[in-house]
Structures are given as structure tokens and as C-alpha cells.
Length: 106
Image 1 (tube, rainbow, N blue to C red):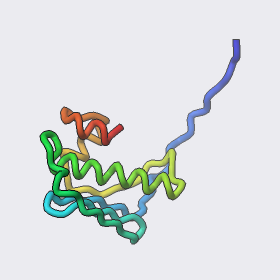
Image 2 (tube, rainbow, N blue to C red):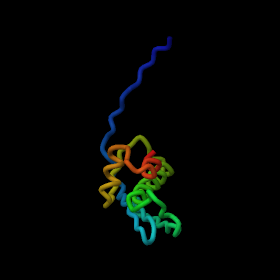
Image 3 (cartoon, helix red, strand yellow):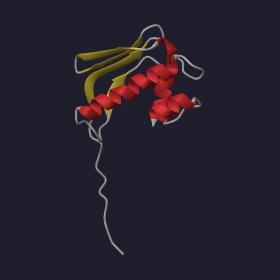
Image 4 (cartoon, helix red, strand yellow):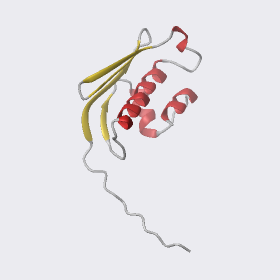
């Protein structure tokens, strides 16, 4: 039997990279990280049953996570600003009653 030890590493201070995420049902998604912005316009067919503004806002957070990963940021706590309380709650809990949002959270 192999004996190994795992060391717990403190999270440290949250990173404040000036992250802002937002979404609009009439246009798309906007993300700002470290003063650089990305705007993605959605297709007219984006809205199907279960996909609403909450889902769109959660996709914005998911895309932000991909941006941070591409920047080499991982195993960190980051401060991100969003104006959608449903998205914030779903991300905090790690789940939502909406299956589309759950796929984005994963």
C-alpha cells in the first residue's frame, strides 16, 4: 500500500483583475479582464426553452473562466463583477434548477 500525503495550500488573497461580465438578450455578451474587453454577439436562434438571460449571464462567466485559463490563472480565487443575482447564486451554490445553466457551471 502506498502512503502519500496531500498538503493543503491556503487560497491566498483574491485576485482583482478588474473582471466584469454582462449579457444582453438583445445583443450578446461582454467581458472585461484587466482593461481588455471582448464582445460576442449571439445568434438570433440562441433563445430556446430554458435559455434566458440567466443562462446568457452564466455563459459570460463560463467564457471568463476560459479567458483566465488561457492567461495561466488557475487554483486561484478571483473577483468578478456581475449584475445578475441568479447567476451569482448559481455559481456560489454550484448548481441551478435550470439544466442549461448547470451545463455552463460544469
